[in-house]
Length: 323
Picture 1 (spheres, rainbow, N blue to C red):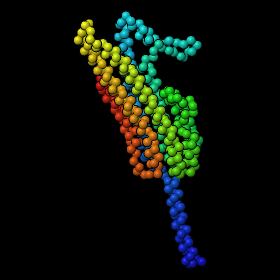
Picture 2: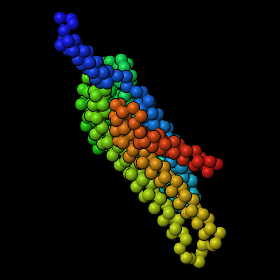
Picture 3: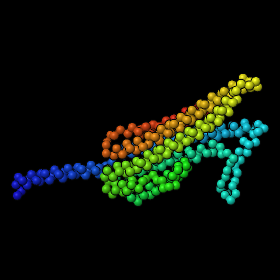
Picture 4: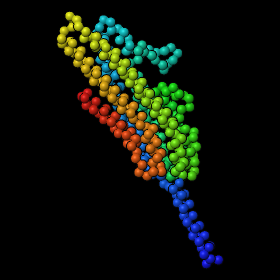
């Protein structure tokens, strides 16, 4: 039977089939390239660094302006209200609560900055979790659950600080469907399961991107309102009248020009941050493609990284101008 041509041919075919099946299994379970995940993680880390430094500049300017304007107001006979607004008032039966007649912008903006930093840190942790998942045998189901729980808690904290509408309605960084796909990947190490983790979490990333862009647009509207109020007060001092002399007018014009420059610089910071969050979903989508396509062009991931660098450079440039 061993010399029978028919059986010999069958053995050869069986060998070929076994070889093909083996290749298919290797294709499904092969080692995941770490580079795309490292690039994505580096990009969101750079975004966190750049955003925090750039927003810190806004805090410093708001504080300095408040001090200067309150000091000037205190010189006037009608400046008692500005002085009173410096005082923090306690609230009866609430030992840790406080209020002010009008909370200065520099005391409000740190909360916004803190919320952005916490959310960016959550994105960093999420990128590191994806990288750990891609690294074979590094994460167990129990470890994944713990990391996902931490991510979801941090996202709720950030959403609360940024006043997202559904901050307390089960918002999470890892969707239920993504968790189920992650379990399947941990058990079988198939590329398709890792792709499914990213696919199932894509809508959440897109929703988060929209909410973050909305938060930045709100900050831009607040900035514009602040600018309009301040610029109007200065412009009112330049209306024709016989009592204001040229040196005083020149000083007012200079103050208005400086206010304009400051407003445009701060608006540029917010625009760069807005653009960064707009590119986040595309970067996440590219990461998914890179799981099965070696050498896939991570253009949006690179854009995210460059936007973070740009934010940090903006802060450095503004620091130089203030010296």
